Image (cartoon, rainbow, N blue to C red):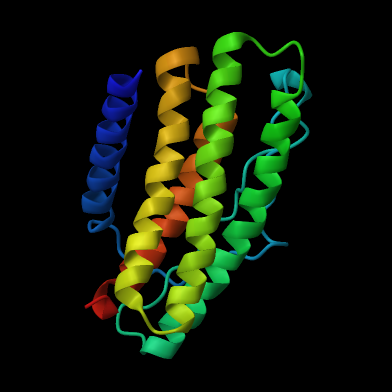
Length: 193
């Protein structure tokens, strides 16, 4: 089992590195995307029966900060986006817990749901740490905590891909969280040293 966890960790880190290198190809100057806020991005509510899922994952694309923004503007941007993402992730965690408690959930899905509950809980802590780091001006530590958010989300996504098959609700939500984190990382890049 430890070997499996190590392999999953290596895959997660590799995915993170790949997504970070891909993020450098994105133009972070795009001002047209709306800002992420708790009320602007609807949350996905997963269910044990996909047809009964009452909504969709966050559909609002996260905004991007200008590359040459001053530190206070970058801090405000990252704090605002992390606060909105934190709220949506906590709501998604509650939906995961409800699905865990559903007695009709199969064994493999249940294992992935428990993994996701654990790693999303860690991602919530990392988001809170990111907000604290940015507030105190520690952009280097904020960068580390933001990277951990992406790694945790990747772990959940990979569990479903490997054990159950891709879960569209998780995939969509995970992609959204990674995009928000990637945009925040791009904004912090200039100030992380």
